[in-house]
Image (tube, rainbow, N blue to C red):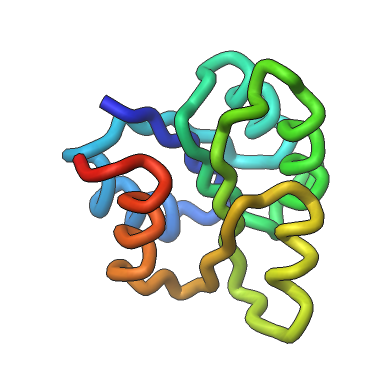
Length: 121
């Protein structure tokens, strides 16, 4: 079973992702960017769903720190953000995210991205 690290500080968003993903993926969690970096190193997930607006360190810095760890070079990071302004996606990609989804999440787009990066369940 593929492992996904969910780095998200809003309980409602975590609950939604759990409902959508728990049957198909092993899930691990972090509530802030620093914890997300630590969990990524400890858990070695296949993919990280990284909120960009996080406490302690934001998702941009957390993505940069994950990318700076050679042991995590193959981990896919999908940035998640309620910000859909011009340049937000480019900023996330520049920080090290492989892809980007806006909130509220479109379930079909989420599953398309997961299938693309992780293959069919």
